[in-house]
Length: 413
Image (cartoon, one colour):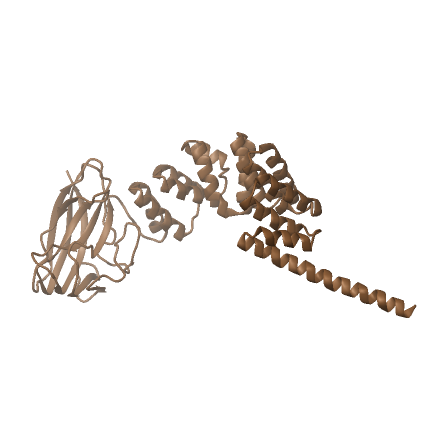
């Protein structure tokens, strides 16, 4: 009797070992078949483990790439029969049936996938897309919104779907996408800014309430890129005034360079390159024209004419006439292309509207410069730029230093 028990136990152990080997080999072949799209490997995996749903799932995936949808779906159904509570198998079957234009069969399989994984984003998102194509818009957006709630990365796509379906109707898009909280409103504001809907983006931005500074900067940049300058200025001004700065229209922000230098700013303050070619910029308090500081720019040779050294976007009224004032002084400046301050249209093309006289060569004390320009009828903003004039020959180096201070703008009657 003892010998019989030992034999039975040994046989059972061997059977378990061989089953584990066959099962492991089947899984290995199944994974290989998916990587290599090898149907023979998938079939071998099924033979080794005919009761393993994963082997049939791998075979169905490979069949879906190489043969008819019907055969792939039939193989998936066999996998589901072995593991009926696997939402992913139902999801695969639904996608296959949808690919085969079997909307009813796909919807039924999607329902099972959603039932088994009610809080997962993918089943609801795919079912929502099917419902959308079937014309069941309310049910579709209910699914899509819940999926986006589970996976926020889907929300921009949800807005895009609603935007397309509503043919660009902002109110209907807001309703369909269920934009009802701060995070959604910020995302919608960014979307509207990208579409050039500045006023509508601002409305969503205001409705969102308190917004992080990095989000404000991103929205400002998007609005500026779409030439929605007034709306971008409103967002930027709100950020500046919340930190103690005061701005008005028209005005040159920090025209006396009293604040710290801000590199690569995307708003309406001075835009100063972090590493300007052939130049070094710093704030100097040794001999300002007004206030306590001025901007000092030291040239060390190479500096491309026409490339902005510093610039600022300034909001103005279309068709109005303006005067730009500033002070400058030079120290040992030598160049065939002297610095000049230019006002250009902020829109496409950057047409030059006016410019100052060239800043002096050699060494000079503070001098006040002024120039006037008239804004075109469709120009709500200008770009004020310090750049070098073109040289008559190349190369065109520049040496020495200039100091700038006391920038202002005034509207002329």
